[in-house]
Image (cartoon, rainbow over all chains, first blue to last red):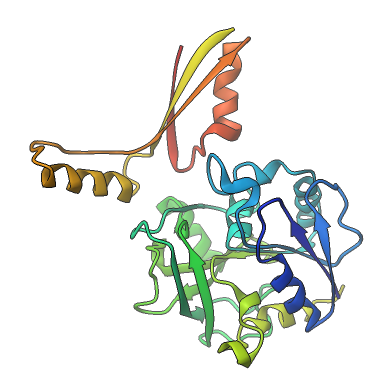
Length: 220
Length: 73
């Protein structure tokens, strides 16, 4: 399994994502300005502040040359994971439903969060079990997941709610405690917490590795 | 060139903590009788063809899922 990690101007978690992906396979960086995915089997859109997050988080990054390729790759069933800013970019690009709004506290918050696995059949959670808890750090100012109620109903009905914040853990005010959603086919997943920062017990938890292990189990 | 202003507001019904923070701060300064404060963005631009501004709003300037926009020229 070969992972590609997109690097935008202003990305800051792409190296951790590379290191995490290399625990389970090969990984290399993909430059935002190149409309070329270099034949990778899975794409990670990492955290950071792409293009300075000017105007609105993820609003400019969605037009990067690499994103057109990511959209075509996703439409063909390619594995795509958006983490934090990457989740915001995937929502702006229309690959995932909804949008991320400022935390209700309006504060940047960095903390470990407990997440409940709601769907363990997506390409990025198939190594987990439903109901299991993952402890993963989150660090953001704009992470309040929002979608209109009919869209939320549809996501729930289709099993597209992948992870939820456990009781008391929804610090950003996300609708229905949603921490991660997928597209209908389950090959594209986005979440605000950072699994790539939780791949070694040295930093408190290795639960984030489960997402990378899941992708590695999907036949290339 | 025509000068166009686009006002972008959080959609009605979506929690606007920025507006709430301002609404709470004003009485603390002695300004009473303030309600329904919302904080948005103003984009000013000079355009040759102002008929394109709505499309600009839909594709980039606003996110219609979470924001309403109003074009003033």
